[in-house]
Amino acid sequence: MYSTLQKTFGDMPRSYYLQQFFFGLLIAAVVVRTAFQSTQGPGFALILVVVVVNTFLYPCARSVYHRMIDFIFGKIRLVAILTEVFPSLLARIFGMLLCFFLTPLIVPLSLYYGLGKTPPTP
Image (cartoon, rainbow, N blue to C red; front, side, top):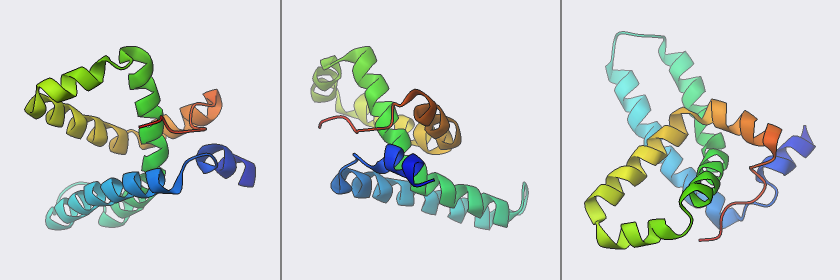
């Protein structure tokens, strides 16, 4: 168990983990607030458990997401960020939500393929 945690979070800098954990908490707060106000759908306890697990594993999923984006686009995405702010912001928010809700799928795959060892360099 310890080796799995070490493989997932061992090389991740604390500042990177805390930054991504903060954004995960923001997303979790919105999801919990929405689920609390809703009276339909699955039970609130189940949603709460899934949100807590996703929040703690979100930094690892985000690290894998950044590695995949860097592999596919390289450094060209920096030019796109500097030229068009609004579409870039929408793409970043979409990527964050995608990582948060697909965390249960991304993290096991990253452990299997060894992608979650270190986060990308900023």
